[in-house]
View (cartoon, rainbow, N blue to C red):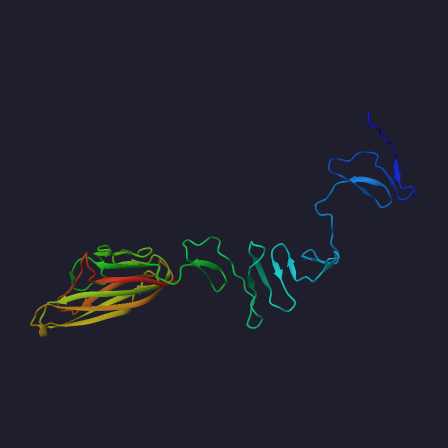
Length: 307
């Protein structure tokens, strides 16, 4: 049987210090501590046994080689905001590479002159397609945006001829779809001659007409682009004009062409729409040309950028 020594106290040969041993065992993981008078007791280790004095709870202190706290409250965190201040040089954050911290990329605050306080709120998702750029509103709310080129474009054309005025041209429209014709991004939609845009933004709209007159008298024609911003009232924003002096052609049909163009700020896909009107001499015969395979009377829609 192993030998056992039973004592109540343990002391140095000189008698001090002298420690009184606890009368009962502690629990697993506890440690033995003194009360400063030599009385030992078991206690539990806490997760944060230290309390730093001489600083606030929001400081991230610097410890010197002598294990003393130093520095000022230039680097603080209150549970929500991390402040990186300085002593006279614009603050920056350096992020180092994985190979022995050989290289870094830094984010640095703007200089004092001309600066103001502002916040950039990052988007909550990754870009939807590669190559998008981070853009922001005047409130600093950022989003991913495709820049540097067109994102939506399409051509719609009249598929058959018709005569006389049309306000608007309410039928026989189709998106160009033959001989390699294509659409970039989302397409326009059309109902009874009223065109709806697939997205908000700054749009260029161009309307081309091809027509002919069959009279020995002087004839003229107008092609008009009309837009609405309330889904109700349509106003003329662009006009194309041409004339046909059929008498100079011995009464034979004469063909004329016209075009009109506008840049439309589409702030709502519900309320902002466009239509196309054509009209000519009240007493003259005018035929507006359309074809299901060729662009004769047609409209071009191109989104130039965001609104």
